Figure 1 (cartoon, rainbow, N blue to C red):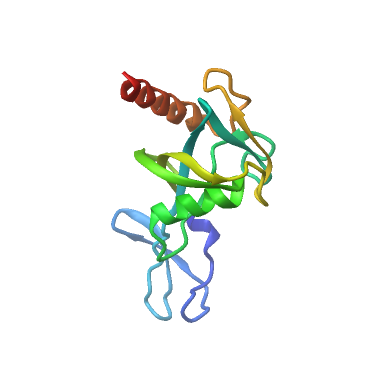
Figure 2: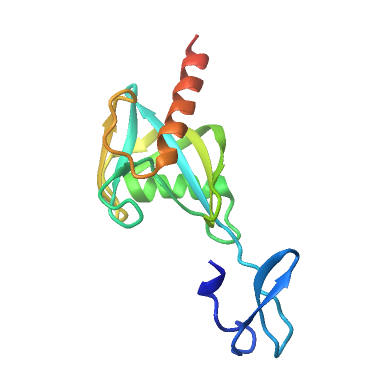
Length: 167
């Protein structure tokens, strides 16, 4: 990730690499700014409809052509919950109400921090948006090939929570 930044965003000078706070970081020798790469925050929603899970077939990399739940980047200054609701609408055509928070997911060396919610559809019509090749409903026990290795863990957590709430 660090190697992707080569020029100072303040003065345009070439960056050097300097050990700061135990990590090699891009540093501008001309204006003395150190670049700290921010993570990318992603909001996702697992939506139950007719006892099935709403899934989209991804139209873009990573995971193009594979299935996942609706998700997308949170814009700077946008509340995460608002981003989650917006992404569902953009990718599935559905209006959604968030019903709970499932968790935060991240992995070593990835800039993505994923915040996952559960939700229910409150309107709209299930149809793929510009970031999806398809949108469909699946039995949580019979899912298509998933786009990300963490998806199974997240769906299992969601399924366990559903089971507890229905008892």
